[in-house]
Image (cartoon, rainbow, N blue to C red):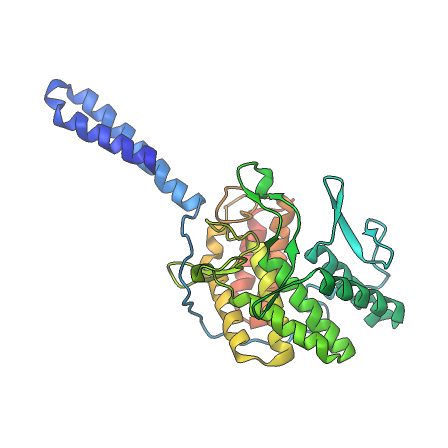
Length: 337
């Protein structure tokens, strides 16, 4: 907005001395200033500027139902074993992610692989798959960090958001998506094993969702905008990104935790997260084009567009609210590869 304010100041100075100008010149300056203002208004739509410093969030009531079978996005009900040849494994069969020539234990990468092993265990009954998932969980426990009453899964590498050198998540950052997928995994592992220690871990991962930006703490993953919308941030930064897929994957963790424990506060936080999607999903839509990846940047990716459609349909099945199916269909009509 600095450019717009500068032009308005110039225009104000020009208007003071417009007795020395022709009407045509005045009109040109007026149109120029108007064009700048329109550009700035457009900018506020493409790039959200809410610093998300509130801590009191609101929610609408939703009916939360159990997702059966492959309605859950982590449960595709494999008919054949999942392909694992693309993974890089350590000596215990735990997947690592190679970034810039260095191997890292990445919470999302590990969780998604463990889901596949658990899925195939449910289909095949082969206990080796359950054992592999247990090894993944054991490794996640070793790399986790305890902070206050929370367990955090940090990303120990620098990450350039949209590959921009001007927006780097510094090593040690924590993602709501990573926390959400880890929360789902520990809930699933508890259901498979009834190990009470896993439930204790799930409680501590859930506690991390109460780390709010507005509380002035480090390693926050949740924030509340000026409208009382609760956001779960995949890339927590001074100006939050409001990333759509990461937000929904994070709330799926809250969903799995609520279904397992019946925790009413978790349900309210889940409903608040869903309320935020319902109130803001239109901001990601681009008629005739792939949807935006996040609100902060004017970026879209074709493969994430389909992910958005799938996740909106998951919210429809989770709540029974037809709005999410309608939006999924609208997104589908907007763009297909």
